[in-house]
Length: 64
Image (cartoon, rainbow, N blue to C red; front, top):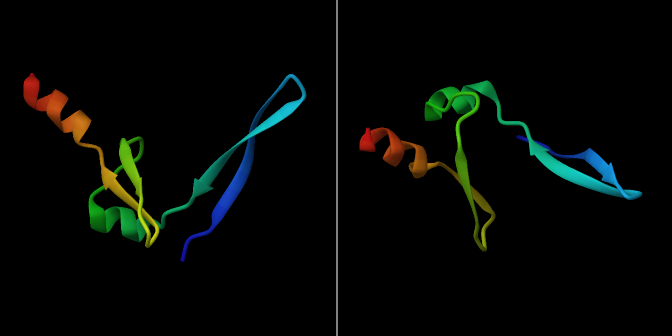
């Protein structure tokens, strides 16, 4: 299980701006082969959120 957390990102002109954080367990990251700092894509569906490894970085590496 993971928990959605709300963090204050910054305050600008007396207005608070937040970011939301989901902590993914190391065991899940290892199973997926994901590492720290990796770009992920997110899609909202009727069933929830779907995260996937970004293909943009792979395309840039293949172009070299």
